[in-house]
Each structure stands twice: as structure tokens, then as C-alpha cells.
Amino acid sequence: MSKKEKKELSEEEKKFKSLRKQIQEKLIKFATRIPVFMYLTDYRERSLKDVITQLEPSLFKKVTGLDVSDFELLVSLGVFNSGLMNDAVYKFKRYEDASLEYIGINKHEGEEIGLYDTVLSEDDYTETFENERA
Image 1: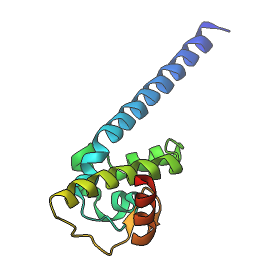
Image 2: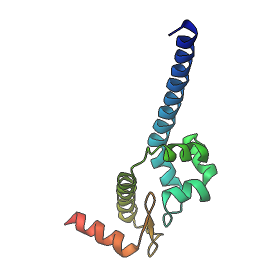
Image 3: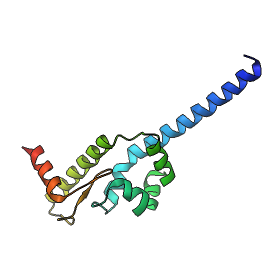
Image 4: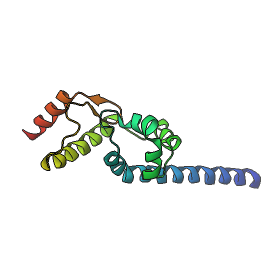
């Protein structure tokens, strides 16, 4: 390789590393701030993906610092495993429900429950919750 080819290669490597670092930073922001976003949004009956991209993109930007385009980039890169994300959102909502019911609040009674990219009926959600208690 000539010096010029080596320099071009190292420039490409720098760009790749920079892009990789940006993606890592965006992912860390998402992971650390998404529980706050889920707590603040009142759209429990919709999937989290829909809430982020369609219903409350400005709240998502305020809380996480990420645009919808950043979120869509992470999704397109295959960063999120739907099954694991659904499970994480389910567990968050389960603990949130338990704390709200403890103080006597249930303003979402009878509504469907949105996970990451799917929605459960109240019966399915309750049945799963009851099975985990047993």
C-alpha cells in the first residue's frame, strides 16, 4: 500500500470509529432515559415505538435528547431485540402498576397495555401478572 492509500484507509477508520461512538452514545442516552419517558407519557395503551415516533416525539426529544430519526437509526441497525424490549417494558409497567395500586390509583383500568412493539389486552396482561405472582 502506498502512503496515500494508508492515509485514506485511516481516514475511513476514523469516520467509522466516530460513527460507532455516536451510536454508542445515543444508545446509552436511550437506555438511561427511556424509563423516565415511559413514566411521563400517558399513552399506556399504545406500543412504545408508536408513542416515540407518532404520539410524543417532542417529549421523547426533551427527555432523551434524541430525535425520532436517532431512534429510527438505532432500530434500523437492529440494536433492539423486540422480545427483550417487550419484556423490559412489561416489567417496568408491572412495577409501576404495583406502586400506583398501592396508593389506590388505577386511571388506566380496562385499557390495553402497550409494550415495546406490541399491545396486550388487559386480560392477557393481568393473566401474565397473576401467573408471575404464583
